[in-house]
Length: 310
Image (cartoon, rainbow, N blue to C red; front, side, top):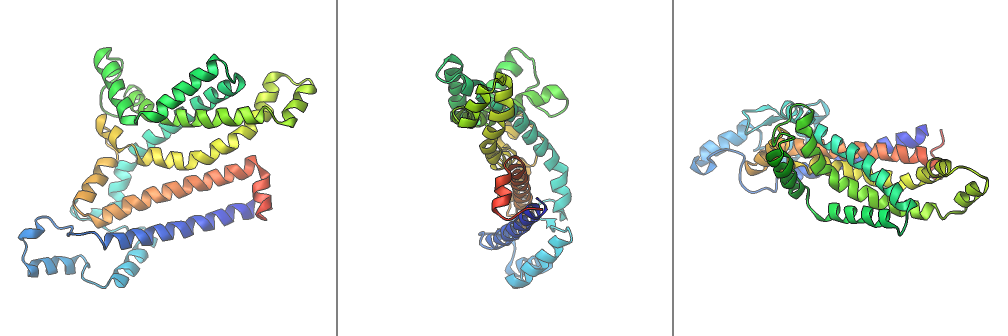
């Protein structure tokens, strides 16, 4: 298991290096400049600014300097925020987006697994059809549509929850549900499909023939194996929910990283764009690492097939 984990960590750092390199090079292809009112500046003034920020140096030199600073925890200063350290700006906003995303993932995953188990055990019955209808509904409708509906019904009409803000349990309910619906729908579909397949396997029939109770067969044998594909999709799904909560953050006035990132794209704030992209990439890669480790724990054949015995 130790070698398996170390191998995955090696892949993680290699992938992050590629992402950083591609992001840096992409910034050099963007049109325009990161300076305000650049069209009003003379060529001499523009060159002076580029020299001050090191943008007049050859790209390989800029790249080496950026990588050296990155290794030492310096992502540079934000052009749009008076050269404040990008890392500080990100850490000030990102915890809110992270909190929102993980709450949505936890709620959606738990409910999705439960609904998937129920649907799989009642294949072809009313519970199965009802669960699949909810799943199709949740996948088809964007989260910002749910956000607007929930905000109007429960924030404006019955006034059970605040329509905006991010302070206290009540303010978390509507935005979390808005994002969790998609997670719930996707997880429920996967879980239901796997439960149907697993319940028809020979070892399940054998367990039932031995006189094991239904709950023992379901939770000790069927669910464990049915969870493997679900865990596989949770990695990219987690990163997608956390990075894709921009519109929901805007609708509910949540002070996350979304609006800050959009402003950086509009103003060509290279350090902020790169810092945000790298942060999200690192989150995605770490999440996938955790998924790989869990995958190896649940199904030891995965790590054994790759020579990862500890």
